[in-house]
Image 1 (spheres, rainbow, N blue to C red):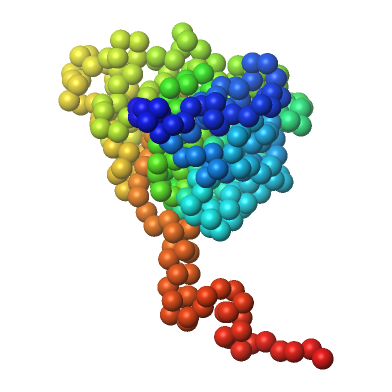
Image 2: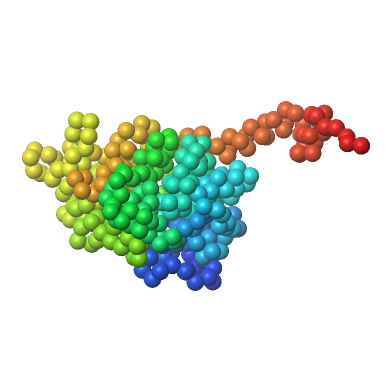
Length: 341
């Protein structure tokens, strides 16, 4: 970790005096605190940072930031964030959305922001429920979820944010969960340092309407055997004793115990987050914590052309070629104007 003191920022520099208005015990509190720490580590001044949100519990977050911020309308956070970054490429732009705001009404904007590879950091707070509107099922709710809008259980399969990201040709995807503060910080910092759209899914607990939805892997007694923290260049090991690993099994993955059934440490896969082909990244992201451990950390981090940089480059080239000094100059030089008497 870089020394924050050399850059002159502390987490408190990104925190304002507002009291966070989330339920006591809500996972959003932890995510907010980690975001303050990540921003301090990155060293980007508050006045060069913009936090954009849509509608939902998570979308209150800009009110608790000492940065530029905009609380927009339902599902349009990605569209506004794209406009902000394209208009001012010097800003570091964070988008805050819930699973409903980002993947239901905002799903179309999400996939096109990812496809375009706009240099924004999208944080998806995934509690698998609509919290602000009091407990309806969301696009990420598991099949069979009993909620206020599905009293007999849902009869549909959910979106998996990683799968949606990869389907839109995403180049960065990371995942963490609210009580794993260190991994969440690592994911946020890596997302901000990535050039292009960076999607970070944070699995978050709604203590009121979906309490314990992530407990099968997040509870302390379950974590070691049901989760794996991926780091580029390191062996994919997990388990209480660190002796379980992921190996290739045909075209799929299999969890094994090192030293049993003929498997050695050499058989365990090494994580390559920078591989351009996303086949293995998708397999890792689709593990659900049951038969295979759920994957956390930076799963994919690949360089590609960045939308706002390409727009800025194109604009500069055309202005130079046409001799435009600004918008008025462009309008007048096209001779496509007329006077109204």
